[in-house]
Length: 210
Image 1: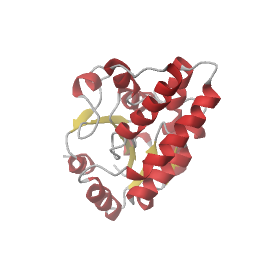
Image 2: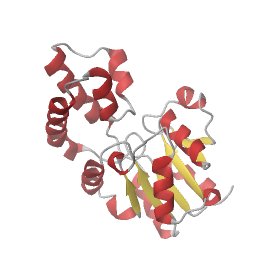
Image 3: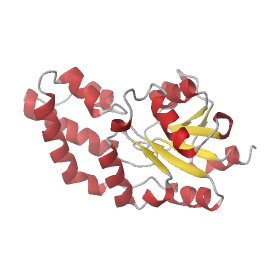
Image 4: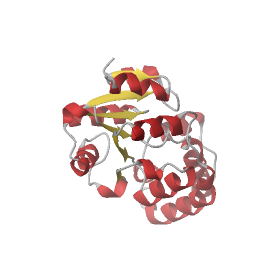
C-alpha cells in the first residue's frame, strides 16, 4: 500500500460542528426557526450545495453568500483530531503518497488545512468544485488517483460517512470507516466498508499488511 486518500471533515478535522453552526445560522435567518435535532443530524457529511438545493430551492445564491460569510468567521477555529498530525507525519516519513477528497469547496479545504498545519502533508487536493459528480460517486477518487498515478490495488480511502465508503467501492479501492471522529459504526456497516479504524495509528496495520 503506497497511497492513502482521506476525507477531511469528521475524519481528519474536527469541523462538523462549525459547518452545522453555519448552516443553522443561515436556516434560522431564512426560516425564522431553529433546526430540529433530526435536521441537524441530517446535515452531517453532506455538501452545502445539496442542503441548499433541498432546503432553499430558488434562494441558493443569497443563502450561499450568507453561509460562507458566517463560515469564514469561524473556520479559523478548526483543528485536527488527536493523533492525526502524528499519523500523517509517520505516513510522510514512510514515503506514502497522500491526498484529500472532500465534499467542501477547494478554497475552504485549503484554508482549513493551512489553519491546522496539515496542508504540507498532501500531494493532491480534490474539492467539490473539482468534479461534476461527487461522493457517493467515485469520480473525485478517480481524479485524485490519476493525479497521484495510483493503482487501485495500492490505494485506500478513509472516511467517516457512508458516502465515503460508497465512493471507494465505486472506485474499486478499499474503503475504511474512521470511528475516531463523526463516524458511526452502525451507519457505516450498512454500506459494507472494508473495515474500521478506531484510532488514527491503526492505519499502520493496513500499510504493513498485518
